[in-house]
Image (cartoon, rainbow, N blue to C red):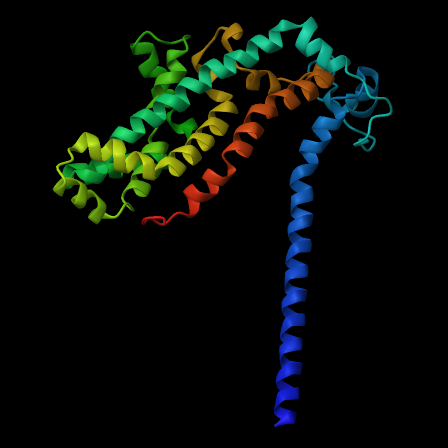
Length: 308
């Protein structure tokens, strides 16, 4: 009997050691990948505090061009520095105080993105409730078309959007960005899938109590979909906050372009400013993600039902 107990204890210890080793290896692998993913962000933030001369000395050859406008051959290894020799706030002073163009472009980004997020959620809430409550082949066909449109990358629909915007005479205006974004099928698809997980018994109980469709939508569906709406809003904001192709194609006025377009046009003389602008540009998405992190995780993992 004692021998069996000793064997069981040994097996338990071995099993625990194996589990510990597996967890340790998985943690190390996750830490390596996390470091690789965070390195560009850390590099951007730390380099934004370098002086212009130090940035030029370290990265000037990467962005240097020839007399004909082509890229130069990099003969030496680029010096990636995470710690500046001397901390300098000159880049931020230029961006925030001396050159208001960057702040104007930042607010252009806000003006373009915030209405898209707000009204796409508004449209998606009504459309998702309709897809959830209505039955019939026509509804399924329309929802299938939504899925097909969602699977298409924006570059595929860019030319049709340009032609429609030109036909509506909204080309070179913010409406050319707002309308396709507001009626994007992304939020409708996700919110419909989420709303269909609401137990039918809850809706039937509300109908027995005399609740109408508006009361069911307002008092049952929307409160239960709060986490999904928040997570979808975060994803929409990040997607459109980084848009580049749409403003370049649909708006010819450079003064209306968002800050993301400037970041895609870095030249040799603005490398230092680009680091500072990129750091400032990262602040809103990071704050929104940190604020809605719990909702984002809950919206992705929720499988429906009533919480106690």
